Image (spheres, rainbow, N blue to C red):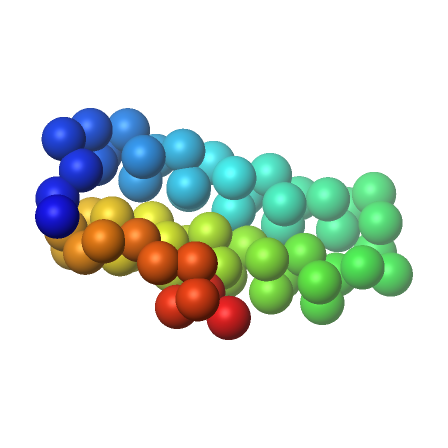
Length: 60
């Protein structure tokens, strides 16, 4: 199922990834967690752009 507003969702995912990853500047001790979470947002972005149904369990 392709989302009718997939580009907007992809942009939102991209911004979320950047936001989470930028938190490492303030909280460097959490850098690994921020990186992992950022990668999850980027994977979700790619799923949406490919027209795949986003699945939370695929993000682990």
